[in-house]
Length: 378
Ligand code: FES
Ligand SMILES: [Fe+2]
Image (cartoon, rainbow, N blue to C red):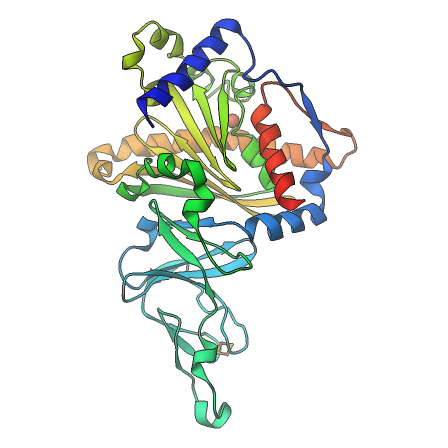
């Protein structure tokens, strides 16, 4: 991020801290619990958001080298990602073209031939059908070209593998990131590796989990045993950049920083940045690493969440092992506090106790995020 922008964002927070004001002077807002429990809303979100926009399917380090493959499920679709012999990442539906069995069962591996476990129809890593047992007698005249694996548009960009199920079968990640493209690329994800990934199957709507990251109002209470002392009470700011949100969560060192000349201010030393890449990926940037949180909605009330600690590859050394281990454990421990609350909210939604939920003036980023969802599905 440009120094100028860093200073601008930090100045804004210093002023909010001094005046005890909320970030924007907007009124507080109410939303209906239906948006988190109604299967019809969920179906529209899946179709018009998750199946209409580029989604991150993997980090490049997960699929390095020709023949590397992995399987994932996104937007209710089972995927096979593979780096073909020419080094290009391709994405296919993980579905056999004979009678529809799941083609690959393993989570990841390395190979160039994928043979269906049912009758052994076989494809290469470019998706060409290369083997059909008893083809001449069973399927005379079979046009192998017509039975390539079903390919899904896929693009490698900024250290991530993106896929898209859009109806026009194209993908344009730069357009999706819009104005945030340059800043997001400066995370330099390409030069990072995954230290560790933890997964959680949560009984919570995907939006509740995103919302948990968008305000600092809860830090002092929900995280009192963990990170609360590291942050200032109820202080954060955000900017919508196209469909994405950049939140700034200042640490307790902000007032000390304010006493120094602004040329010396560095945002990473005094605040965590959180990028919410619409719809469901969040990147929490800390001083020397970042966290990749990806919510994969399964139903209105269920989300599969992957949480990865991303570290610079040069720092993936045996000497630093225990440091990263501690970091990952603390992140997990802290976010589990949020996830537990998310599940509790979900349980309370259809009790009728709340005709509406409230977003206060400190929670404006939640209002904006939900407005983006509404706009996308309307
Ligand atoms: S279903 Fe895959 S080969 Fe028959
Ligand atoms: Fe939290």
